[in-house]
Length: 175
Image 1 (cartoon, helix red, strand yellow):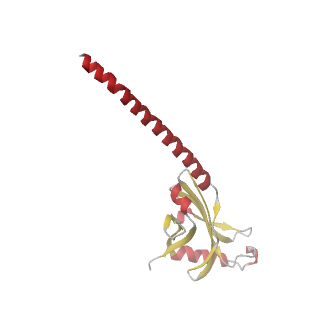
Image 2 (cartoon, one colour):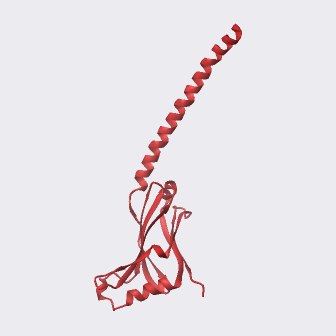
């Protein structure tokens, strides 16, 4: 009996030391990850305005603007489509010109969205924009001047942090 008690006492100290070492290493690892997580959140939660792009959509030149922010693993975005020549105030445009463009875009495009890619061109984030999220913006004469999508989707902060460029994608309606 004494030998069992002696063996147990001899094994208890190394096992207790091992247990405490595991607890301390786990606590340090948790603290390090919490600090890293806060640093990453601080970086990606800043609002980012991406470079404006001009492209042809349904044979009409349009300007595309994108503003994003990633917070708590959620990507928030403001995506705007407006006529490319819309550098002057909208009141100087002929009546209906903008709404014709908007109707053409909405009538011809089935779905669209944007991608965020890293410096090497690898896609990191893809966001599909639903037409229900798109709203027309109007000027003081109640003319449609642009389309605005204001929404959010799930997004890994680590992926968003790697994004360096953006691109539009769209698919034409089947006839």
